[in-house]
Amino acid sequence: MRCVERFALLACIVFGLHLLHHARLGVDVLSAQMMPYTLLYTFGIGYPAVILLTLRYVKQYPAMGPLAVFVEQAFPVFMALIAVALSVLSAGNQQGVTTYPVMMMLISVLLQGQYLLVVGLVLFSWGALAVALVLLLGVPWLSPEIAISFTAALACIMVANMTECSRITQFELQQKLHSENRQLQRLSNQDHLTGLLNRRALDRTLEQEIARSERFGHALSILMLDVDNFKHINDSLGHVQGDEVLKSIAHCLQQHVRDVDFVGRLGGDEFIVILIETDKRHALQVAERMRQQVSKIPMVAGLPTLTVSVGHAQFEGESLIALIERADKALYQAKQKGKDRVQMARAVVSSVRT
Ligand SMILES: Nc1nc2c(ncn2[C@@H]2O[C@H](COP(=O)(O)OP(=O)(O)OP(=O)(O)O)[C@@H](O)[C@H]2O)c(=O)[nH]1
Image (tube, rainbow, N blue to C red):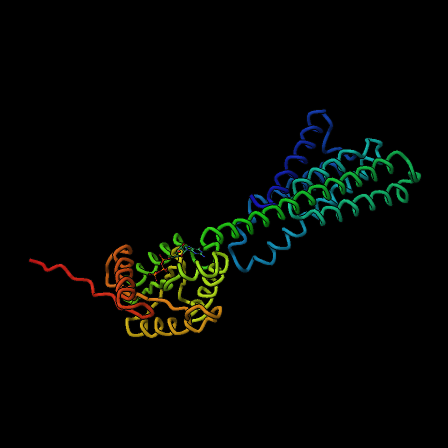
């Protein structure tokens, strides 16, 4: 149920109860004295009833749109005017003026999202009531009616303000939760050392890209890279400096792929690059470029040039595990052949049908 509909339902109940109360007391609701009350209660029930029963359907007709918007926007103002009129009438008849402020207060709490409007309406209602009491009915300033009026107005504003504050706090909490969730999700996909994709994210990404490649017939290549003699670097520089070398390699790899490609760290000194819509020929060019760029990373004097071995495999309809295995075998061959080189994987051997 929308906010305006909740407000309309509440108004129907409140004014309906008033009308019932008068009828039950045996008051002649059509007498000259009671007629203004009866009319105001009837308007108070009729207007929200129109909103509840017809507005949803009327809005379906574009030509009726502006009228429907006007009826909806004028509704709180109309309710406030009825509350003021009833307050003035009942004050004039010495029947007390507390009922309508309480009603306005209830409305202000339930009318979510329109608190500022409600504060304005309440102030307007009680301002008008005070003027009417003093100027029209000759009630003196600081009479009990005036005191009750302003106390009730103050209560309305405080309740509306408190509810608004709690809504803002809730909104802020939700925002914070949302951003922390996003941060958590990002961290759960990230390699803690290099900031690249971690093993979990790599598997998921590769699975998605394999599915896309199968569906659209795009080429897909992966490169598996392993730093050559990293144990020696670690032993010479220490683990902390070794970490810095891994970070430099990660940065270098990321610099030399397109935005659509993915770079991840499998663990240790091993990296994977997923090249989207890239066939063997282009993938080998990228792999060669990466190998050359890594060798340009400055190293501490006395240590040999930093190099990587690369295994390449192009997706050929096999499973994710089989694809990674082919790239891994190619990498192994690159190491066997003397490191610091790019090796292409063997093609998948297709099974012969009998
Ligand atoms: N600094 C650092 N070292 C790591 C990390 N993870 C693994 N290593 C080290 O990386 C080295 C990996 O060595 P290997 O790949 O087995 O061997 P390698 O010396 O690179 O030799 P090849 O791979 O044959 O060229 C080991 O010494 C590991 O201890 C890490 O997060 N940080």
